[in-house]
Length: 241
Ligand code: IPE
Ligand code: IPE
Ligand code: MG
Image (cartoon, rainbow, N blue to C red; front, side, top):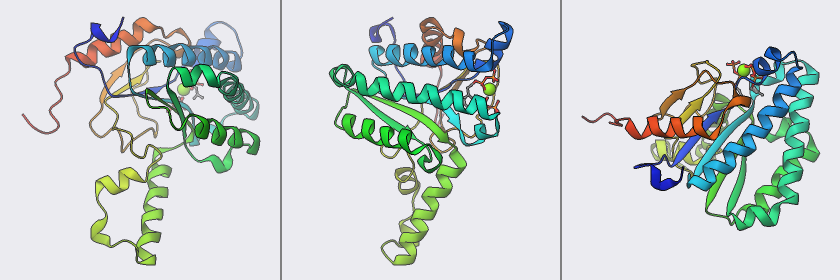
């Protein structure tokens, strides 16, 4: 498909990359092998979304709650994330040619320092790109994000630089990790679960939800097309008639 095949495209798509573990289990593989396949799907769908002309796409890679998993699984996910960061550095010219701005949403303080440093570098080196905004949520939790924003606002009120009446939804939104990016139009969750799992709660206030039973490593460009096709047919009312 190309952008011309759709009457309307979401400005911001969010994807909960779920089902890696079950995909591996079905094949008698380790959960980590599921994550390896899931990481390939992430690259494939990220690229496809960019080619289609989706301006903002956010992938949920690791939640604040995922630390409760066995250490070897957490390490495997972080290793894969490190590989991706290294690749992003190696392919910097290519990414810049495609106009891809990479950003990471989440609390970086708990991420290994060498990874956190790479995250900062990749963000800085793509900060002037404007064609595709590719966000990856790592150690991300929406409630934590909102709490962090509220705290920063409270500090400004305490210091006197902000008045309580200046606190608006727009101000709160601007203090989130997504900052000036548009709200989520379409939220995609594969693997049969129909829940939000602490992802982009504020940003998805009026998002359309699309679910699929496909496990993330099996997710294809055609599944993404199907989600976009469903989105195209939705009647978004935003409280109107
Ligand atoms: C999603 O797949 C990847 C992460 C949460 C990091 P899961 O690992 O949650 O896969 P299932 O849900 O156990 O199948
Ligand atoms: C959500 O998936 C987090 C990511 C995809 C990174 P989970 O597998 O952690 O969600 P729950 O536990 O099923 O809600
Ligand atoms: Mg899961």
